[in-house]
Amino acid sequence: MISYISFLALFFSFYTITPTSSTSLQDDFINCLHKHTNVDFSLEQTFFTPAKNVSLFTEVLESTAQNLRFLARSMPKPVFIFNPTDESHVQASVICTKKLGVHLRVRSGGHDYEGLSYVSEIEKPFILMDLSKLRKINVNIKDNSAWVQAGATVGELYYRIAEKSKVHGFPAGLCTSLGIGGHITGGAYGSMMRKYGLGGDNVLDAKIFDANVRGGGGASFGIILAWKIKLVTVPETVTVFTVTKTLEQDVGNKILSKWQVVADKLVEELFIRVMFKVAANNGSKTVTMSYNALFLGNKGMLMKVMKKSFPKLGLTRKDCVEMSWIESIVYISGFPSQTPTNVLLQGKSPLPKINLKAKSDFVMNPIHHSGLMGMFKELLKEDSPSMIWSPYGGRMSEVPEYEIPFPHRKGVIFKILYAHNWIRDIYSYMMPYVSSNPRQSYVNYRDLDLGQNTKNTESDFRKAQVWGAKIKSKVDPENFFRHEQSIPRLPVQG
Image 1: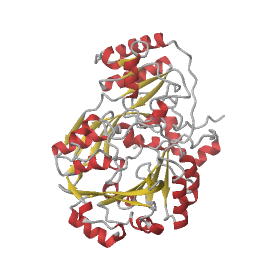
Image 2 (image 1 turned 90 degrees about the horizontal axis):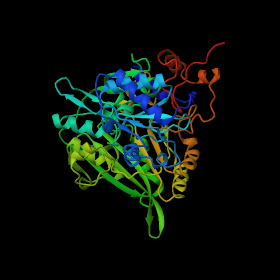
Image 3 (image 1 turned 135 degrees about the vertical axis):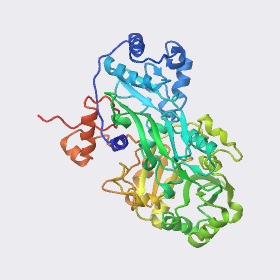
Image 4 (image 1 turned 120 degrees about the vertical axis):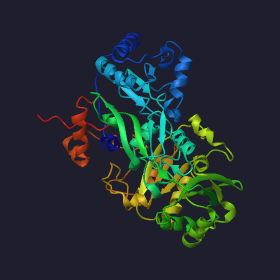
């Protein structure tokens, strides 16, 4: 399906526009919208500009953005924000921005590590179209499917599925405030990926607009309006646990080393990730490793699996908590204990907004003891670093890498997420222990460090997935959908 191809983006693409005054641009855009949609809209509810109400404009701009780095005053801001309330408004917006020659950025959720969905540092002026009011969800238990509009959050989708059935779910992200539109475009991994694969593996259909309003997909080809997804079965009772060990408690890294060997080979119903933090320890600092897990079954079944395959963790029945699948979503997301499940309808993250830089890696072979000790040394240099290891295997190893444009499949033991300002030092340190030729990265963890010095030459295109550029040239020849890492067109032959 073309809509997935946006994850291949590795190059910069630039476009020149004629400057327009903000006032005339706003007026021209509104007049154009009225001409190209039969569904009326309220300016007060859909149109936000700093000239009219700066506090309201700021509130809308910051409503779903999670990274404070891109909310600073020094960052470029859109001339105005448009919140379409009908899908025809999206179509009209594409037509009008194309006619006016102004750059358009589109966001569904705003969990964007480089802010590319709501900030443009390469083109001004630009308009932000925020899809957060397009969030309808229609769950059909009879045919095990659901239609979900792009502006709905992952948490809302989970909640609406659980409303209809206690034994249905969907294998997408662990962070429930993600906008579903962009999330699935990049693959969408979560705690059930070892059992059912990615969210992207479970897409049945999609509704898309491109620059010609006739098809396309993703951030490089068009705008996802809605996904039709396949529901999966979950047991009425699942089990979760979090077991935390300090560096001192895991002498010789025996537990962590064992995790690396077994995490991708455990039964596919079991997902155990490792979350690394730095904590105080009797006046000094230590690294803590929290083994955070979801098991699609009861605690009795889980204990049998752990005793057979991962006894070194020392899991006890007291560590295990049985609950419904939807309750496990709240738990795994990081909400406080006993938080009601309807918190998922608020579309909010349990984590505070911070200044964040993120990177990712894929590990093919276990990291040996000396490598781990060097990694811990790097972690201890900072006060509040964050790193998460998420296991692969199971269904992830069974889906061919060409099934959808998501190549990180067979052979991957686990994925690493690095998050904080110290990131480049440890990222450099980890180079010998992760995938190489090329060093792989998860597209939804956008990272503008990648491809910084790349030029759009024929040689570069041969190194990239040329067919992606070919499709870009065919469905979006004018390069209307572009950002700092969008797929470029093929070079003009001359």
